[in-house]
Image (tube, rainbow, N blue to C red; front, top):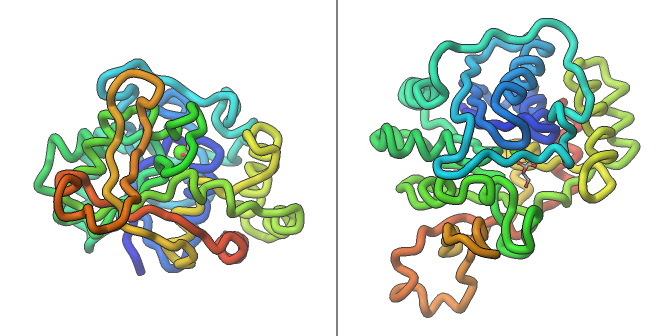
Length: 304
Ligand code: BDR
Ligand code: CA
């Protein structure tokens, strides 16, 4: 069973990811950390503890950064609603919030776990603070999988994807740390899209998680940019089991300059002959370039 730690800004599609991770028989969620992003930190914490409580799961949850490293927080209410969950209210009592700061919980969990996968589904502030505060933990992480970036178009700006745009300095720190990074970005993000039958199957099942996922997907179809439901962040997590993504290693830089391309993830996709020379200092990132969307949706519905 793979040990995973999730860093979230719950958020509709973070909710879908959490529901999947907590239901998967092949994943052991060791900790969940919260960061400001889609909504403010307090709301992220309420949504995250609410969902974990609704499933009756026992997993440490901690609050982290309430703003990016250098800039003011910016949210995404237009996509997720002002409550972050498109109006969905998890039933029951919320899970208890751990008293530790997210960075402390991350450090202690990484050192106690067996080669965990660190999954970042939000602006990368918490993970950057971890790298800078406790660089020695980096080597204990098997890999970092991020919903972040794009090697094509952006979503919040023509060039930038939300999680990177919200805190580009943090993204640059995380992408260049000496741990393996995979970037599941906008190039594949919207493709796994449950249709009406899949959503009905989730709603009809006996699990609380399935009913919640169905409601969230209906909400996403209403408020999301494409007018249809999509797995979004949950795709990264479901792929840990489904292995449905094609990854290509690329030299990749985060643009931290101010201006129209701030937050862009620029990949050097030129012929590999250039590799040894001028691109040597560029971090190499595994970029998701294709996804077997039906396989990922099937896996999601089966598990949740
Ligand atoms: C990312 O930003 C948020 O809106 C989603 O939760 C996802 O993590 C997509 O750009
Ligand atoms: Ca997210």
